[in-house]
Image 1 (cartoon, rainbow, N blue to C red):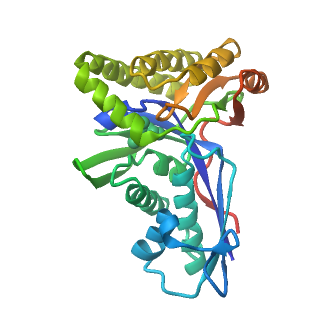
Image 2 (image 1 turned 180 degrees about the vertical axis):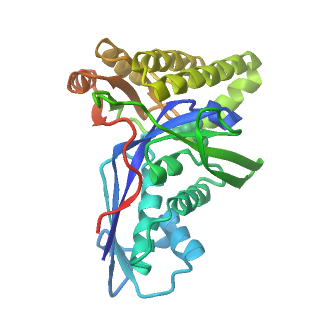
Length: 324
Ligand code: MEV
């Protein structure tokens, strides 16, 4: 038997702008996905027959990447993340499944986290018609704080590069890490789920149409890029007051791009009096907001009162690991 865990992620800065080559900053969450694999007489997932077409991530990793031809497996999945909420649950599933399979097949090997990040990205691309940024899978595999950008980013440590053939042509990213200075360990993220799914593809194409009909909106993209750079500097020196201000500013620009919703705005407003900053996170249109605070329980209560489901996490948790 092999069991692996991979965390979900939260984008602190740069969602949507990253699609246009600007940097995005994401952190791994405490919560994630556990995958366990066990030999079985037939292919099972959660005790029911495994139908490959219904699980494109898993099928791609099994057959295209591992060329798996051995005996059937029973696959069990336990997720602590809201799904379709912008917290990277499908990326965490791919990374945890790849890690569990690597361990199951080659018991003695250490996890190759860069290989797992690339494997997860390839699985995401397969199931998203060739369009996926490496942000979610890199954060899930590497853990900590990740900066993904079309070009090198000053003040970060480059970990690897990623290339993907998309329907619009080849795209390249540089995946970098930043060490967050959180010496007193008193800073938390509080995620608030609106209860509505976040349709990433629809939101990304909505922004693209907005930019075509109103090219002035490119200014908002540039503004998000410079807020991301400011927020990243603040994170790396541990100035969380400045990180919070940058998060508030980023939310205002995402509202200008028309990707926030009244439910997201309501949760952001509820969290702000007890937070250093708060914003929507991910593609928007639903999904989650995130607040940064030294008073996580109070923020979680306010999110709940405003109708959201809260989740509290440290800022930049560990990446993929073997549990058994
Ligand atoms: C979605 O979590 C983030 C977006 O920037 C899309 C992407 O990076 O592929 C909206």
